[in-house]
Image (cartoon, each protein chain N blue to C red):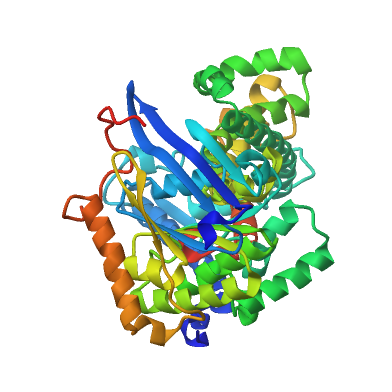
Length: 307
Length: 279
């Protein structure tokens, strides 16, 4: 035999370098699209928004009067990009000692912590269900319909009951978040844990391996790519859960509460709600990115076909 | 000669396998009796659907026979499996992508609770045996198909099983690689003294490797001929070009043809309809 039939040329380092330069490229693309979006936003307002008298770069004199008028593009429905950006450095409320940016970051940390706990509980619970279902056809048949049903019950209906059971506080928010998180993990987990080649299971059987050894050494590693896909869905869902869960639980200090408050002040200061929405979106992206990063690290040694 | 050896490592007595699906019962194997002696190299050959892979899995206790007795190493197949008496190699390497070649070879030792130091040295030996020492740190997907299959053989031999069960291990390789792998397998077999039961549908491969070729026929799967291959060992390129080799290849081919009434059928379904042919 020869060394010539190796494929050393296409091994690890090159592939890895490629992946991380890919990360850089997607960040650049993300920022570029953000800029394009802002330009399109302002261009649309320039063509069909409210008259412009003032920009951050100076006074427009005489005022620019757009040739068309579209209601959705007026300053209340679609505030100027600079107004939204400027809102971050302005005071959160007239009497507040803090800027809106500081308040929103505080709120994001609060909500993010709840989402993180919810994601952790949800992902573990989801995985546990998947492991049970893979090992017991009976339990799978009996319980999967309930798991599916759980996802059709709106969280708005469930959250007040949850508050009655565990009380007002961040735990009930985390549980709402977990409730929205576990389902994708269970479904992908079942798929992933049953994904090994039947011959791989025969192989383990020929070693007289116990079911827990098979689970730990074959099923779980084989399920990881599936679990990461689910975790990416669940990561964003956990943020949504943590935000939405703040309203019925009546908890203060998070993004959900901020959205409710700024919603009532929309007509006088629409940019505050927009700023809050942007922070909430950024939190979701952060969660997703962390999972994606973990995925790249954990699955770095898998063949290209695995991702 | 081998068949009359006093203590067979594999002892099959009137083994039968029937599959039931959707109310219909089909016979995959019928009246299989066979003794394999320690150190023998035996090939099971026959067209698709003759049940040779099923028979291999019955020997390995991965499938239970419907009737008959299966003894491996002087005990029921179940106990032999629990005692880890055999290693298994499939047509696909079935290596785990997330493990390096080293870690793949170590897997059975890990499962069996062998200490890390022993695992290391054993894995090193095995990789040297299949000439993959330089590739221990590589991942399976970085190796060619032939190299992956060699790693699978190293894994199967890592815990020194007394019996090696191989299910068309080189069936997915090109002809040149397959011949090279055949040479290597014989070298490994001669060095380890392991008993090998080898399933194939390649007549030249069966003749080149084996001491005995078991010819099987489908519907239901049964043994029709046992052909002694008395080619001298060690076997090499010269063996493949000898007249004796061609004579034996022809003998096996004719035995297969006779079993199928003149023609060797194309690929058939794994499980064929049972037409009252119970043994």
